[in-house]
Image 1 (cartoon, helix red, strand yellow):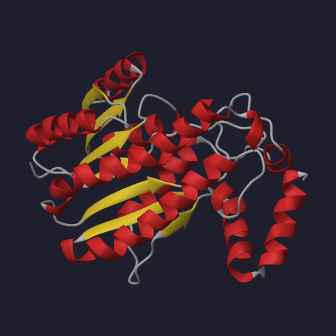
Image 2 (cartoon, rainbow, N blue to C red):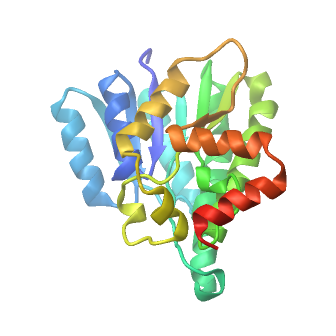
Image 3 (tube, helix red, strand yellow):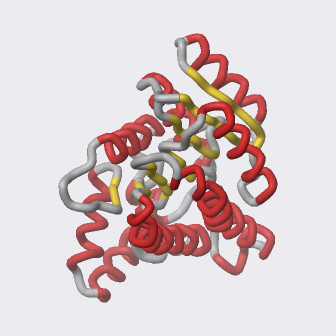
Length: 260
């Protein structure tokens, strides 16, 4: 029961898979969850073959019952919850009015609703684990609303605010809540995505880059509280511009990169 544990959603592929592999290699007992059973089976086989510890299960992050059952099972098995990684998400790109309402709603339900449900359900397990952490996947595309990614960026902006609020609220429970901010990552999520910003900025990050960023953010705490962690040079530059420039300048930069 002394080995740390990590529970991650969207673990069957991409960032989730890379993060699960990295933390398992570092000695964490990993709970890997997704709706993709085949991908989870492959992940479990790889981690087990390397001598790691993993528990998997099907989890639809929009389903509160799934969350309650999977977290209870995982905690009963490992006895603690050191890190919750809210990674599961979807992306739909295109002009706002051309995406159907069902698509917009799915983005909101998974990217934001899934984080709310999961984090709320995980609270008692996090509270009872000294030094527990929550990692939320944000996106540098949410620093300023992006054309053709309106609903996606909106959900990530909401996750940003949720992260900041909970980091303040839950400090008294010794729970740290942080957000990692990559730009576009070369995973299945961006396959077929063709927007002004993907064309101008490119897709320069790998899933391993983000996994390494999550590892660094959770394992190396500084003296001063830090909530946001940009991944990659582009995200760091864009975040700095957004923080220190007037709104009109930020709007102009985003208009230029998006080709609007």
